[in-house]
View 1 (tube, rainbow, N blue to C red):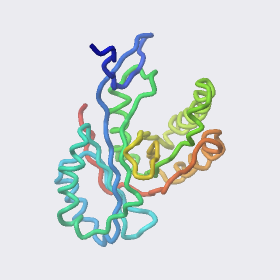
View 2 (view 1 turned 180 degrees about the horizontal axis):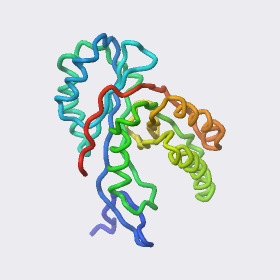
View 3 (view 1 turned 180 degrees about the vertical axis):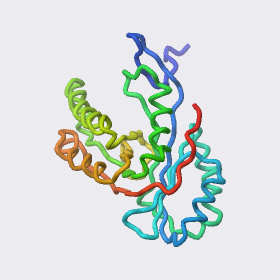
Length: 239
């Protein structure tokens, strides 16, 4: 007879001192393409596909685009999304594998409303027409971060939390943070989407982030960075 307790893989939060949990999370897949001379058919294909996400014009490639698709069921990426990209007009484009990103929303353990944290907030940020600019990038945390005392880790993460709060309070930038452990070919740990109405504040976030302890001492790599402006965003789905 086994004494092993069943695994609880649900996301955890805390509401009024009580632990809350939700065994759901949102997956997001980012894909970039080149050689897109006419974006209109691509926009039409995205609108007809019935997927949740956004389509960006690449600021660093005048024929480049980026697509992010969200789904609670990751089967979407090997069914609907695969079929979409295998057909016209996507089939004629050049895939840029260096920008491939796949991640999932996650909780830290103190969030009172897990549905809001894991679904509503990231979806609202992604599909808000008032915030079309985005910078998407992966990051790899230094393995030595995990050996730090828990209080030190919390202090480091709080520094980034304060940065996000200051930019978010003024409506300058919002962030979408995804875990990608085991989902990334380059062993990245997280994916970050910086989203806002203008590009400069997003760049300023990255500039200020360079001075934080986590970035300066406990990150092994950042990027590549995809910089784009949304030309199509889906409706925000009900959760």
